Image (cartoon, rainbow, N blue to C red; front, side, top):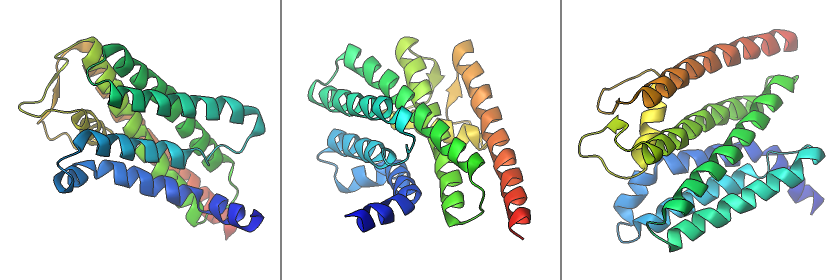
Length: 215
């Protein structure tokens, strides 16, 4: 049991990264399982939460961390069973934002404190970047929920467009197919773009420093 736990702990960043990539591929899953679209989204979102539970290793944070994770999972499934419930929708966004923000913080903290440059560090850094995009998507969805028509996105429907827009914002690709309309949406878009670039610059600097120390 201890050996299994040790192996799982060593591969925690890999599991988290795979769950995030799986979530980003949700539209592909929906193409395959078109008869149960809502269930597929909920399952993929839940897998990210379950994979992220292994990240927290500080005892003082574990109770709060697990509590937020359980609450988030419960709200997600309650929203799935109560389609169109506005209160559950907002509660899911708030709970998800708290959980993934805490998750991202723990991953970045672990990356900074790590003394070695290895595969786990690389996987953790990539997963941290994806979490920033995920957090941005949640914030954009929250803004458009509270302030309808904050974004112009043509014929696109569904919550996935917010995560798509978040990632093209942090990567500064900016295709122009989705446009922030309200000042609130525009300001968050600017912040996400800046965070995305600063994250890459800081991570590269950390990796170079760790690599030189290792040499």
